[in-house]
Length: 294
Image (cartoon, rainbow, N blue to C red; front, side, top):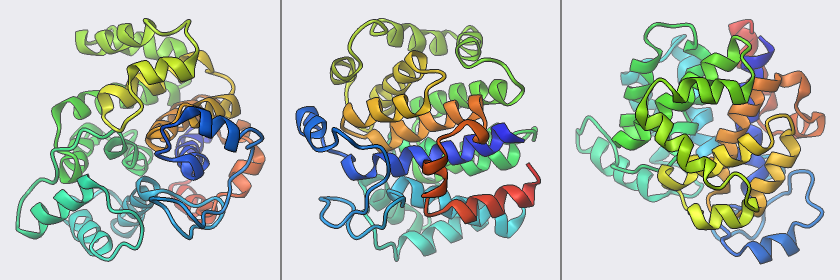
């Protein structure tokens, strides 16, 4: 299905697009440095992500690809195998090791059953291959909960992840994006509260609104910030990517969520061709989705 391909490619594009400006909080600096930014850039001197070729991923995207490979190797999500794959890969990872990864490595290596207590949105967005693989599986939400707890054991993040996954499922069957968000929000008062909070900023300048909401990694800030951009640009992938980058902070996790929803809404055929073509992991994503015959 084109929408499932769009979901997966959209997420990875959102991460790669944000990479050069990831975790820069000075929006004036971003506006100046990325004034004409339209395509990915190679990374050679970044405070957190160094020596990465054009179209590569942050640590969020790299962990999403790790989960994708784990799922492919077991023909479906297997928590014990994913735990082994995650510990093996991340204990030797050459990219940026964030706090959630450090804490999870310590806990899991010591025999714990859950990882960090982090509520970072990236903990959910790196689960996108699981949604692609199991979107029509009755065990989807159980698998999602287990995958999240392995690295990000936080109830608020689980709530946000469940909300956004339910929206994605509506998009996969063809419901328009904005209608899907409103429809799912009505199913739970906490979903509705998150949407209502986001709507308080809907008519404001997005960069300034995201500063007010919070630019950092916590889902309490990142989810409504991403939703704000999604609601304002439901049919314009490139505009959403550019605004997200200009808003600064944890633009990679936000970019993945924005890419997931817009990609599932639009389908891969309507994503910018150059962003699909220049993505380093393009062949891996194609192989995964070809295997799924979607």
